Amino acid sequence: MPVRYDSRRSLDTGVTEPRLFATDLQRYGPEAILHAVPPDRAAAEAYCRQLATSHYENFPIVSWLLPKELHQHFYNVYAYCRWADDLGDEVGDPAKSLELLAWWRGELVACYSGHARHPVFVALKPTIDEFSIPPEPFHDLISAFEQDQTVLEYDTFEQLRDYCRRSADPVGRLVLHLCRAHTQQNVHWSDSICTGLQLANFWQDVARDFSIGRIYLPREDYERYGYRREDFDTHVTNPAFLELMKFEVSRARTFLNDGLPLVGHLPGRLQVDIDLFARGGLCILERIEAIGCRVWETRPKVTKWDAIKLLCGSLWRHMRSRRV
Image (cartoon, rainbow, N blue to C red):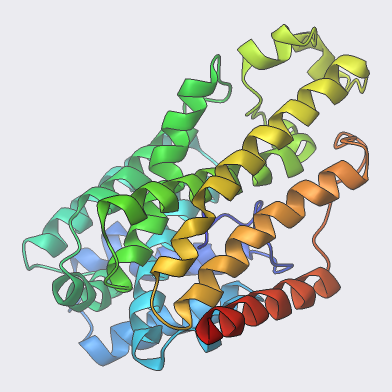
């Protein structure tokens, strides 16, 4: 269950190409589609498929795990998330990003009104209709990416959790709709996994995020452990920081473990897919602990060998559960 379609925080080793997005924005941005004839469904789906399979190194594996009839629907949802995230992160101008995200929201509203114009929405509309997906998860994602343009630090964990509710949890809810498994209990577990994975990504990328002006460690947490705001500026690793990171790692692990019961309530091979993402988050946390929580000096990585072991473990658990 991917959390954010964000090149800076994922289990894969793929690299986002901002130039490619700039080209797509020129071809399919506000001015271009305003005067263009919308593509037919086949062309729109081909665009979403290309976008999904070319951005993430691990996406073909995930697609293989999914039932074939769901592949295109996942590509369509992925393309929506990819565009929304890139409008927030790849434009390079917060004011322009807000303007483009407002445009993207307008295209979403037009899609639900039956007037899809952008290729992503032309492909997404049949998915929305087939699985009765409400607009809220899509709107929540845009809201989170809009917040990224103005909020760079968080005072409390509740503020950060609210951000995760809109930036991470909606993706899991969309997946549940595609799995036809959207129940109140499943949503609760899914939200826990998605937030836990995003927190794990945040703690993995403390240094990277600070380099672009963002701090996701809540002020109330780091001050409680005696870490100071000015310590971020010099990347101080001291006992206070290490204790802080141990606390945050434990908190993220609790979210992930609390959501694991979801796996057994999903159909077929989808259990493998979701188990893989949850275990991937736990693996990130293990890698943070393996370097002594010294994330200022070293970015903990999930290796290809780790990924293979995760996949084998998820497949084994799935086969074992079928024999029970």
